Each structure stands twice: as C-alpha cells, then as structure tokens.
Image (cartoon, rainbow, N blue to C red; front, side):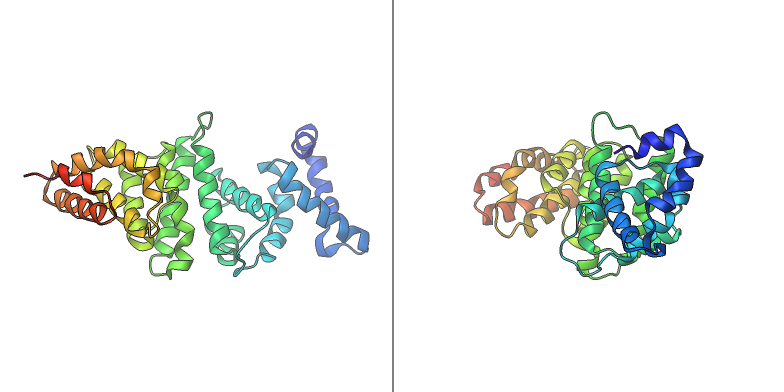
Amino acid sequence: MQFQLLAWLDLEWFNSVIPKLFPGKSGKLPEEKTLDRFAWHSYPLYGRMVLSTLPAMRNRYAAAIKSLQKGAAEFEETDRTLASHLIWFYAHSAIERDDPLLVNFFASASPSLRAQAIGDIGWSIGQEDATLTPAIQERLMRLLEDRLSFLKEAPREEGRELETFGWWVNCGKFPEAWIVDQAMQILEKQHCLSPDFAVAKTFASLASKYPYEAARVVHVLLEEDRDGWSVHGWNEHLDTILSAALRNGEDAKREAVALIDLLAARGFRGYRNMLPT
C-alpha cells in the first residue's frame, strides 16, 4: 500500500531494494519465493503503478506475463491489473508497442483478459475527472489501430479483444471520425461492441453526422441480440437514429428500412410507422 510513497521518499534507494522485495526465481530460500508471491499479489491490488520504478520491476512484470494462460476462460484480479499497468506504461511512453513486455502480453494473455484490458482503459478515461493529453490520446489510438490491423484476419474468438472498444466509443475523449471508423471496422469483423447500450447512446448523438453508420451499428447489434433483451436497454435511441437515417442518403435509408424490418420481426412493429408512405 505504501509502494508509491516509498518511491516518492527515496526513488534511488527504493529501486535498489525492489529486487529483494520481488526475488522471483532468483530467491535461494523458500521464504524468499513465498515473499515474492505475496508481494506480487499485493502490489497490483493495493499498490499504485509508478513509472520510474519500471526498470527495477521489469523482470517481475515479465515473469507475471510468462505465467499467463492463453486458453484460460477466467483470470485473476492481479492479471487484470497487470494488463492495465502495461497499457498505461505504453500510454505514458515508458515502453513502446514493440517492447517485449507488451508484445509478450498480447501473445500470452487470453482473449478475455485482453478484452478486459481494452475495456478498462476506455472506462477509466471516460470518467469525468480523467484527463487525456494529446500525446497519450495519440498513443492509445495507434495501439488500437495496431491491434485491429493484427487481428483483422484472426478467428472471431481471438478478435474478442476488440469488442470492448465500446467503452472507448462512449468515453468522449477521441476524435469522432476516428471513433466511427474504428467502431465500424470492429463491428463488421466481430459483430459485437460492448457495452451495447453505451454504443447505441453515442451513435444516437452522432446520427445527424453519420446516419448510415449509426443505423448500421444498431442493426448489427440487434442482429446479434439473439434473445431479444439487449434492445430494451437502448431502444430509446432508435427513434433518433432511424429518423436521421431515413432522411439522409440512399445507403442510410436502405439500412434504416432493413433495421425497421428486423425490429418488426422481433415484435417492435410500431417502427413501421416511420417508413415513408
């Protein structure tokens, strides 16, 4: 819990003792290995990331990445924090996209953990008190583009990492045109963006500028809502999106009509009243 305070009091000394705090496999005594395990599990849960300690912590981060299970359906809270730390290290220019820590994380982590990491970043920068400098914004945009390009031809299960981009869509901290472009690419690949209610809300606010894209997004979300329950969380935005699409261009109109037909088939027949007579 005092990790950040110790680094602030005497960074040089603290960096020198970090290897003793996290001896890892270099520990000769059983007690040292136990210390390493407890210290590492405590650090992500109760400590706070300190950029200037990364060189001293690098080996321990590397060991934690190595222990990740690619095929794991679930993950621990320490793994979730590890993922966030790595992305924030990159965002703050402590590491680059080709750094082994980041490369090995994306290669070793399960799709669900990677998706959690992407979603956590979007959620955190969407908080009212969160600031996003132009430099950090640019780096996060490049990271997302890099991951999208890498996963373009990957199986859908691997691409699940991208589905939580919905939190980025909703955070209001990125250029509109970029958000729309990335969202459309991810949606066409994965047929999913979560949380869907936040995505629908954001695209309703963008519908006047991007009528086709807004209609297409909710159309795909509705198609993937097999049980028919999700739409109840965002159907309040459908009027805005459909109205904009029906009066703006042939592509947007066709998408709106197809969406209305799907809504009618799902029991929302009232939307047929929006169709031109």
